[in-house]
Amino acid sequence: MGNFHNNPLPSNHFRKDWQRRVKTWFNQPGRKARRNRNRVKRAAELGARPIKSLRPVVRCPTVRYNMKVREGHGFSLTELKEAGIHKLEARGLGIKVDKRRRNLSEEGKKANVDRLLAYKSRLLVFSKRPRNAAALKKKLEAQGKMDKDKKPRFATSDVPYGHLKPEQYDRNPVPLPTPQHEPPRAITAEERNFNAYKTLRDAWQWDRDAGKRDAEARKACSLTPFHPLFGANAAEDSKNQ
Image (cartoon, rainbow, N blue to C red):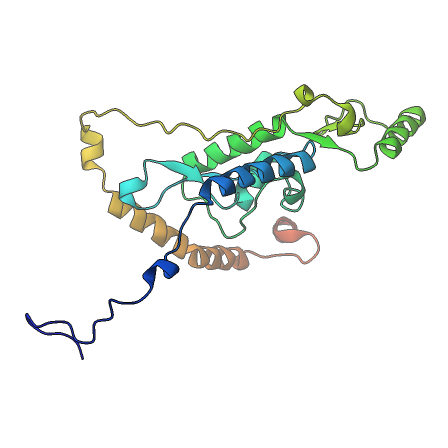
């Protein structure tokens, strides 16, 4: 039963040995040094691979924080397609993929496509078996089957990364773009007369009526005579003759 009004606390236990149950955090500086050593060790084990996986740039949610940008979970399939990267090979190139993510604005999609192209331009792909790759390349060139005019999709290296200097490849992550804020200005007459709600509702209704438009188009096409072998024009020509 609790205490009410200005009465003393019942069954108060103030004689416990509380010093034995106090949790300290004196190992925090040591853990910081250990995390740093683990990061350096992991970077050395990765070899020439990027230190961090590439993630998209997204806006923070809610009106309070949407002026800030941060890294998202993964790139959408539309962004990967426009950058010329297949969704299955992106994982092997250190690019995170999120198949559930959708692009809601052209500006956000363009920013992430530019981010992928910048990463693709500095990417250097090493072969798993450099000797076999170099021998196969020489064999194809000797047989004339190598298309020299065809531009490779990624920059490749036949030399193992252990024989290259660290200056010849870049492992640093692609930096996030700086958000550009529009300076304050007066509202124009066109913006004042623009009805955003009506525009969004019209676009939603147009997308919803796509099936009706297709049905009407198919119905209009079915009214014209159609020849099973030569199409509608052949049937009209036979009638004219």
